[in-house]
Structure formats: C-alpha cells, structure tokens
Length: 520
Image (cartoon, rainbow, N blue to C red; front, side, top):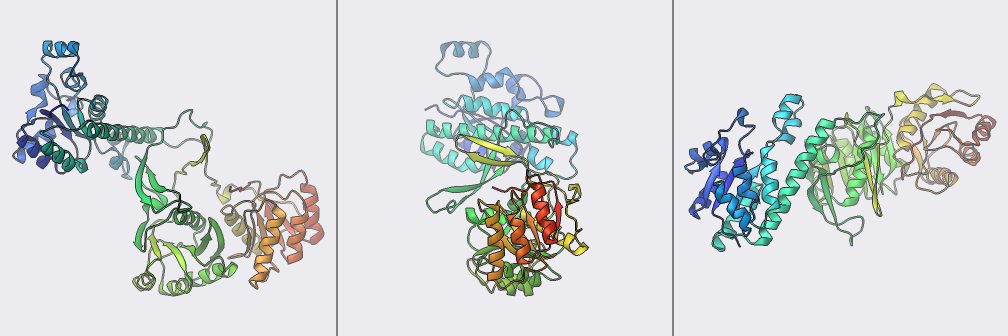
C-alpha cells in the first residue's frame, strides 16, 4: 500500500478542512493548496505550500485556471511502478500526489435560486475540480480521492491505524464516490443548460440519469422486496421530495405511490379539495366550503376503501377536518399545513404519518415519466393537459346544462388519476361511484354504479366521465339505466355513431373531449 506523503487540497466547502489538514500534518503529510483554501488553512494555523510554487505559474483569470497544469496532473496520473513514468517525472521535476481533497463549486445551489442569471450559473461551473477528481479516481491504485467532509474522519482513522496508508479497498471506494460526484455534477449542468424540451423536440438519443439516494425504505410493494427513495441529482427537490414529515413512522414504498396520486389530484383544483387514495386509485374526491365537509363527501363515495387510505387536502388542516379524519384508520395525511390544534389531535395517533407540503401549485416544468420494463426503460411526457386546451364538442342532440357541464369537467379531471379502464359517476363537487382497473369498460361502468348504490348514494342526476372511448353502446345503456344524465368521453371509436345514437335514445347529453387519459 502506498504511503500518503503529499496531499493536494482545493475545496469550496471548507467545513472541517482545517482540522483534517492539521491531522494530516501531524502524520507528516505535506499539504499543497489553492488560493482560498490556502488562506483558510493559514488563518487556522495550518501551513501549506501554494500550488503556484509547485507549478511555477500563477493562478489566473480570477481563479478559473489554477490546477490545470502538467505538474499537477502528472503527479496524479503517474503509475508509480512504471520506469518510463518515473524517468519523465524526474526530467520534468514533477512531484507525486498521494491524496487529493476536492469539493466543487456549488452549481446546484446556485441554479436553485429563483433569481439566478445565466452568467452566475456559468461562473459556478467547476472545471479544475472535476478534472482533479477524475484523474485521481482513475489512478486509485496509487492515489486517494476525497470528495466530502463526511469522509474525513474515516480517512484519518485508517491512516493513523495503518502507518499513513490506505487500503486498496478504501481507495477504490473513494474512486467510485468521486466518479459518482462528477457524473451527478455534469448531469446537473447538462440539465440546466438544456432547459425545457419543446413540444416539437424528439426525446434525446441518450439519457444520463444521475440519481442520489434520499433514504432506504422499509421494503418495496411487498415485504420481500427491497426499496429506496432517490432524487434527481442536480435538480431542485420538487413534489413529495419537498414535503416535511411532521409525525409518524417512516413512509413505505406504497405510501409514496399513493401520496403521489393524491398530490396529482389536489393540484387539479384551486378550491378546497380532499382526495382519498387507496392502492394508487382515488376512492373518493370532493370539494366543499370547508375541508371537513369535503372530506365527509369524499369518504362517502367508498367509506369501506377509505380505511387505511392516504388523505390529501389542498388547504391547511383545521380542527374540524382533523376530527373527521381521526374517526377512521388512515395511513398518511398530506396537506400544505396544519393548525396547531389539528396537529396536536392527529399526532396522538402513533402510526399516522403527517406530511406538510407548502406548495400545492403544479410546477412550471412537467417532468418526464419513467417506467422500467424488463430489459429497458420507457419514457413519456406526463399526462398534463390544461382544461383550456381541451376543445369540448357536444355530439348529442341535447346540450348539457351549465350544472352538468361543471360536473363533467370535474369528473374529467379526476378520471385521469384512476387506473384504466376508468369510469366515474359524479356531481359538480364530488365523486359518487368509481370503477377502476378493469379489462372491460362495461365492467367498470357496472362496478362504479354498483359501489355507489351499495353505499346508499343516489345516482340519479349524476354525470359520467370515461377515460377512453366507449367501444360499444352498452356502457351508455348502463349509465342511463342508473340515472346519469350526461357523459364526457374522448370519442374516436369506430362505433361512435352507435354510441351517440344510444345517448340520444336515452336523452343524455354527450360531450367529446378529444383527449384520452389511460393510466396503466
């Protein structure tokens, strides 16, 4: 194992670096450092050699060029047991580096600022740092690359125990960490400079995903499956990754999937809304003058399925809503805030997870949806369509009433969050019956109606929303039979005329949206 004799230190984040360098000096390690790092070390009583003394060349261009020099990279990349390398090092008076400590300009933190300019972003792209890390990581058999203050203590302990040497296993681990660091850094830069993809752009030929682990999960969909939560490295946390957990045990894989669906539904509405989600399907959604009333109406859609569900609210939870929620076993509550009294009441339930997500507003940038299949990955745009972009077309003889049109639009916004085939019976402010995940659309129509009647809900005067076209008239016949008065669907079936004729026979209003909302 090579002994650590000389270290190059060039860090932006100076957390703990003076103490780390001081203990290296105690181990007789020579410290070479760059401008700002050298000043920091000197201010803390740690002597170091200036990098300009090694290169015989000043740091120039405001620090843009300081480490990019053959005397630095030769000292990192040289193979110690190669005679030719040794000869060239001697001829060019190049000294060896056995350890580097480098962390990078804060590009991610810079671009996360709302007011950041392109010039500011470019100035925070580190060039020398990633080059140093890659060089040392490539030559890990001889050089150790340290990238984070979290690594300092372990490095020092091993050096002290092993006579100033690091094992090959440690150096390889450090190398992997260094390459992960530069990969994520480059991806953040590429993502920022690429900007949003235009609607007319094709998907790129190559996609590099840099993922950073947030936490391990207890298990996946089932106890025998391992799972973890990751964030996209280099991008500002959004959605559920912005949420703060205020109470309860750790979230599970299934909790996160259901909470994500609840969040998607909540972002569809500006008025007070409650969404109850179970097994990645809404089992009830309602709006109301108060959250408590909205919750009770949402729960009334399917109170049996609401047991053990995820509850999402798009307003701060008050004590009345908290009382209503606490009457039934609930896994997770997601809301933009909690009144102190409401938080105190809900926190009495030991296992209830309480999530606070300050912003329920949809992001300006709609992220792509990624799904793994065996042997590959599928990528698509999110199913995001502004209501104003939909050209509703009445195809029936009867026009929908203003009240029916409001209800149809409500149902249309919900059905995209229901597993296909999706059928929803609803009123203007609440769901009445939901049929989800069936292989046959007519079965979904029957199930939605049967569940509503089983709960004692009146279907007369409801409207029906379908995520895709009716291939036959049978779904329309069922809607008329149970008392629905209007239907919204995309249209596009070869039997559209037959389906429209069925609506006219029953005196139903039928609206085509022209947009399908399959959710597999």
